[in-house]
Length: 169
Image (cartoon, rainbow, N blue to C red; front, side):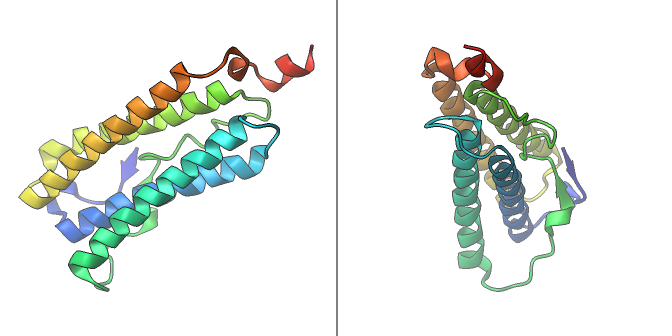
């Protein structure tokens, strides 16, 4: 996890921009994984990544809309290259043969990274509005962790089989 932004100097606008960009980066990484893996059947690793990209995109759009409602078209001071791997899954995470279970574990790890980012950033936040936003975002990431854990718990046994396991039969 990395940000070039000084958390202690964030304004609410900057914090909303940062949060939105964290979601954009995660969405882009999941879209890359989904494209790399393609689609093999109803619920495969590529489908998991495609679904996660949609979730991240939706959350990012909600944050961006909130920012626009409060600050209009004021130019952002936080840029996409100010964040790296805060919520985005690790670049080397996918493999051509990975199971849906492994893909969901990648997603779970990413949601945990985002939770930890907001949790670890909180002590350095000086603005009350930013602190409230980061508390809200940390809670949302906690809900996302629970959502992915629930998905994992509901997986059928075949969702744990890697592609070569399936092909070997």
